[in-house]
Image (cartoon, rainbow, N blue to C red):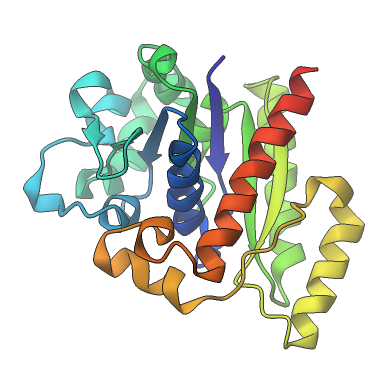
Length: 258
C-alpha cells in the first residue's frame, strides 16, 4: 500500500519543505520508492533538490487543473529512489483557477491514483496557507505530519490546523489522521524551547515524534547547494535527526497496519 503523507502547517518558516525533502531522502536511502509533490508556489522543494525552474517545463499545476498527466511531469532527482513533481509560478493562480472547477477538492487525489502503485511513499509539501492547494493535499493524503517550530505562538496556530484536519476528515477524507507532530529548529539552550516542547507533548502525547530536529547550520546550508542534508553533510546533527525521524515514520505506519 502506498502511504501518502502531507506536511502541513499554515504558518510559514516552520520547516515543512526542509522536513519533506529530508524525510523523503532518508526514506529513499533505505530503499523506499518516494515521490515528493511540491504544492507550494514558491517551489522551494525543487530548489532544495537542485532544480532551477527555468530548466524544466514539468509542473504540478497542469496535473491539478487536469491538462497534464502526473507521469509526464515527474522528474528524477540526484537521490536514487526519490522523484519530484515540481511546482511552478503558475501554481500561484491555482487558488483562483480551482474556484470554478468541479470536484476541486479531489483533483490531486484523482491524479495521484494513476502513479501511486509505483511508490511506497508519496510526500506532499503544502503551502503555508489553508487554501485549495492544502485542501487537495489533505484530501489526497492518508496521514499528516505537522512540523512545529518551538516558539511562543506555536500551539495557537496548531489548534487551528487540527480543527481544519478534523473538518476535512469529516467532509472529504475519512482515512486522514495526524501521524505526528515534529518539533523543528529545536535549541535546548532556550527555556522557551523546552516550555513549548512540554506543552506540545502534554497536548499531543504519543503523536509527538520522540526525535526533535535541532537548529543546525548544515541543514540550513544544504538547499543552497541543491542537496538534502543527508547528502550535504551526512554526519551533521540535522541529517542524523532526520534519519531518526524517517525511522519513526516507518515504525508508526507499521504499528497502524497491525
